[in-house]
Length: 157
Image 1: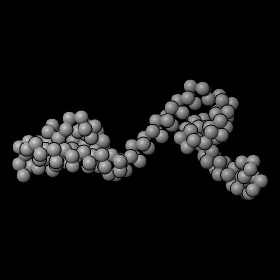
Image 2 (image 1 turned 90 degrees about the vertical axis):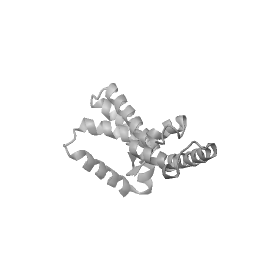
Image 3 (image 1 turned 30 degrees about the vertical axis):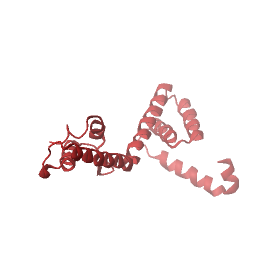
Image 4 (image 1 turned 60 degrees about the vertical axis):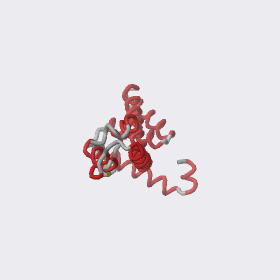
């Protein structure tokens, strides 16, 4: 903020006004707002803000345990972004595995009829079993792990 104040003093006042507005409502108690600020700062990786909010929280008699819990919650929430940003990669893994297994089944002549093609049957079975939705897309994360371990034969029926 010191550097910003030298470059654009009004930006610092604007930042302070926004902070004042965010902390002015009393619907969420101030101690919770501090814990939320610590968690969000940690998730965003803003070390200076984490330190500042932690210092203020300790002065407001928020326990170390509560601060640590907020940080652990931030770690969990941040880690969930790995799944949502990995959707395309998971779909690629799934589709490539599906192609390989379908080709392998045709080569091995596992006895699936044309009306119950292994790939179609597998896809229908996975959709029926999948309950994981990320970013409003059906993403087959849970069945994918089992598919990669067990192969098509257990999933195509």
